[in-house]
Image (cartoon, rainbow, N blue to C red; front, side, top):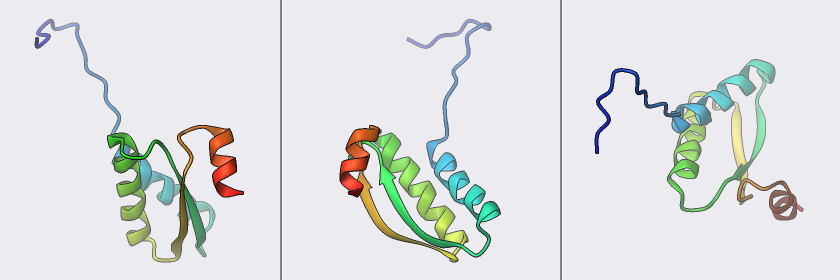
Length: 85
């Protein structure tokens, strides 16, 4: 049920904003832009979809960046390395 105690808090992460902020930070450090390889998380999860949507929004605001590829890394370093190789 719904928690109604005044001491209870719900903490959430805005994953779409997180993806957008990744591009915003890159724009600060690489103002000339460049090509990006997006290494995504678990395919089909709402978190991965939200991060991806934020990245697309960030790239739309910073056309100096271009996503040239996208691979699924399952949020696992070994899987991501194999996907990129």
